[in-house]
Amino acid sequence: MKICCIGAGYVGGPTMAMIAKQAPDIEVRVVDMNATRIAAWNSEVLPVYEPGLDEIVKECRGRNLFFSTEVREAIRAADIIFVSVNTPTKTYGVGAGRAADLRFIESVARTVAEEATSPKIIVEKSTIPVKTAGTIKTILAANARGVAFEVLSNPEFLAEGTAVADLLAPDRVLIGGERTPGGERALQTLVDIYARWVPRERIVTTNLWSSELSKLVANAFLAQRISSINSISALCEATEADVDEVANAIGKDSRIGPKFLKASVGFGGSCFQKDILNLSYLCEHFGLPEVAEYWHSVVAMNDWQKRRFTTRIVQALFNTVADKRIAVLGFAFKKDTNDTRESAAINVCRDLLGERAQVVVYDPKVSAEEIRRDVGCADADGARLSVAASAYEACEGAHAVAVLTEWDAFKALDFEKIYAGMTKPAFVFDGRNLLDHAALAKIGFRVEAIGKVV
Ligand code: NAD
Ligand code: UGA
Image (cartoon, rainbow, N blue to C red; front, side, top):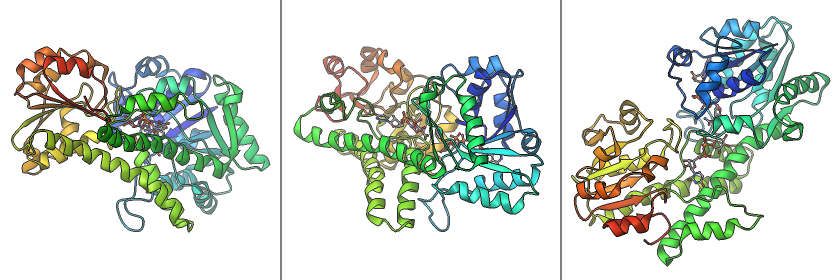
C-alpha cells in the first residue's frame, strides 16, 4: 500500500512519520510545494521542533518515509491521499477575517482529479468547515476521468509540543465516511492502518459531517475553557482570590476536570482562533446569529486578556513604559515548540512598542528573524525591538521582565543575578504563573501574576 500526504507542515510531517514508524510495510510519501520545507525535512535540522520527532524521522526516512516536492507523481502512485494543507482564515473578500480560506484544499482536489488514473481514498486531515467533503467530491466528480474516489474525514487532534506522544497514544482517532459500500470499505482501510497501534475502542467512526464538525467543536470547547478561566482571572485580581486555587478547586469536580484551566496571557497557536472564527461564521451562514455570537465571545475574551496584560505593565510602571527596557521571556505560543503563530507574545510586543518601550525578546527555540517578521519591524516602533541570545542578556538593565511562554528553563534562571542587573524597582509580570512568586518577592522584585495578588 502507498500513502501520500499533501502538506508537509506541523501536522503532515509528524502524523506521516508516525504512520511510517508503525507500518513499515506501507510506503509513505510526504509532498509539499514549498521546496525549502522539504529540504529541511530531508536535512539534519527538521522544520518542526517536536520532542521525540527527530528519532522517528531518522528511523523511517529513506526506509518507508520520503519527503519530496513531486506532488503529481506522488498522487499518481498513491492508494490513499491525505490532505494536510493549511486552511487559514480568509483575509479578503466575502467572509474576510472569519471564514476559512479553502483555496489550497480546492487546488489539491483539482490536482488529484487531473493526475489520478486509479482508485483513490482522499483523507481530509486539514481542519475544514463542515460540508467541505461535499465540495471535494463535486470537484473530483466533475474533473475525473472515470476514476473512483472515496472521501474520508480524519481530523487531527495533536497539540504542538506533545505531537509525538499524542500521535502515539491518542485519546481517540476520528474517522468519518459515507455509509455506502465504497465508503464503508474506505473507512475500514483507514481504521486498519490506525489499529496497528491504536486500541480499536479508541477509533471512533461517524458520518462525514459529524467528523468534520467535531474537529471545530473540540477546539472551540478547549479554547472556551481557557477564555472562561481567563475571565475569572480578572475577577480574582479584583477580589484577592487566586485563580490557580479556584481552578484547582473547580477542577476536582469530575464533571469539570482539571485540564485546560491554566489562566494565561491568552491562548495562541495557529488553530484555536481560526477555528472558532470559522465555527462562528458557519453558524451565521446557517442562520444562527445567537450561536455565532456565543462562540465569537471566546475570541473576544482572549483579545481582551492579551491587551489587559500590556495595560497592567504600563500601569504598574507608573503609567509610562516609553524608553524603558522590557525583557520578554518566551515568544513561542507555548513551550516545547518553535511555532509562533498567533502567539500572545506578538500582541504584547506590538502593544509595548506602541507605548514606545524598548522591547528585548529571548526565546530558546525561535529565531531572531522569525521574531522580527512576526512583530513587524518596518517602522519606528519596530526599530525599538531587539532579540537577545540569552535570558540574562535580555534582562540586563531592564525595568521589567514579562514571561510570555512557560519554558521550563525559565524556572531555573538565577533571579538573584537577574535582579542585580536590573533597573529598580524591578518588576516581573508572569503571564504564565510559572515562577515562584514568593521567592521573587523575597529577592526584591515587584511581582504581578495572572489572576492573583502577589
Ligand atoms: P502548515 O502551514 O504548517 O503546513 C501546510 C503545508 O501545506 C505548507 O507547507 C504548504 O506549503 C503546503 N501546501 C499548501 N497547499 C499545497 C498544495 N496545493 N500542494 C502542496 N503543498 C501545499 O499547516 P499545519 O499546521 O500543518 O496545519 C495543516 C492543517 O491541519 C490545518 O488545516 C490546521 O488547521 C490543521 N491542524 C493543525 C494542527 C497544528 O497543531 N498545527 C493540529 C490539528 C490540525
Ligand atoms: C490545540 C488543541 O489542543 C489540539 O487538540 C488541536 O489538534 C490543535 O489545537 C489544532 O487543531 O491545531 P495547540 O494549539 O497545539 O493544540 O496547543 P494547546 O496545548 O491546545 O495550547 C493552545 C494555547 O492555549 C497555547 O497558547 C497555550 O499556552 C494556551 N493554554 C492552554 C492556556 O493558556 N491554558 C491552558 O490551560 C491550556
